[in-house]
Length: 155
Image (cartoon, rainbow, N blue to C red):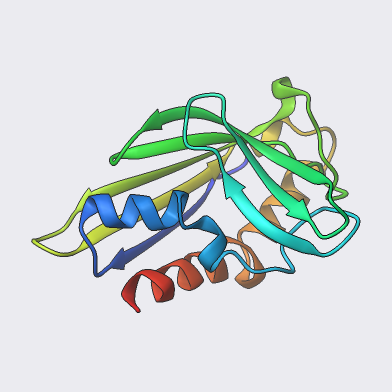
C-alpha cells in the first residue's frame, strides 16, 4: 500500500460556503496551468452530481475530462475518481483510478476545516503510483492547490 496524500486547511467560511467555493467556484481558484489538455485551459468545471465529470474546457473548443464524481453529499463531502495516469493523460479505466475525497467540517461559527485525501496509488502499474503520489503530494500538487483554494475562500 502507498500512503495517501492528506492535506487540510481551515477557511473563514461556513460549511456551505466552503463546499460551494470548492465545487461550484472551482474555476475561480484552480490554476490555468493545471490541466492535461492539448491547448490552454479556458475553464475548470466540477459537475455537482453523482457521476458528474471533473474536466476542463480548452481554448481550442475541446473538453478534457480527468475525474468522475463517486460521492456527492453537499455540504459535508464529495469524492471523485482521479482519471489521470503517470504520463498526465486521461485514463478512463476505473479499476486503476485513484480516489480523492474532500470533507468539510464546521469549526466554529464561521470557519470550516477542509480535508482532502488522495489515495489508492497502489492501483497504478509498476512504480507509477509512487511517482504520481510524489507529484500530487508536493508543492505544485495538493499542497499549493489547497492554499490557493484557502486564499480564494478567505478573500
